[in-house]
Length: 65
Image 1 (cartoon, one colour):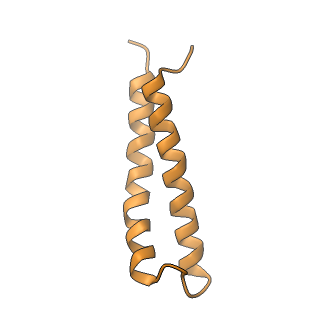
Image 2: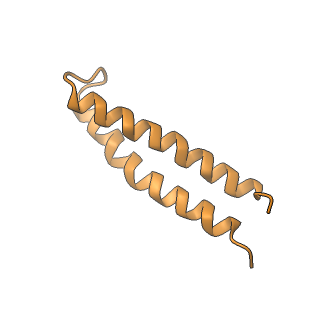
């Protein structure tokens, strides 16, 4: 089954947000974050739920009728 273009867009967004969340976790865990503590926490707080929501939307859009 081919992927719908909008589902691919949301899947790509989920990947980017997942990478941002992972990087933020490592930055917070291993010392002084380059962007600062508050900014890194904000990125993490936005990226975690954004990853899950984007992934679920991509799955829902691509689900057969």
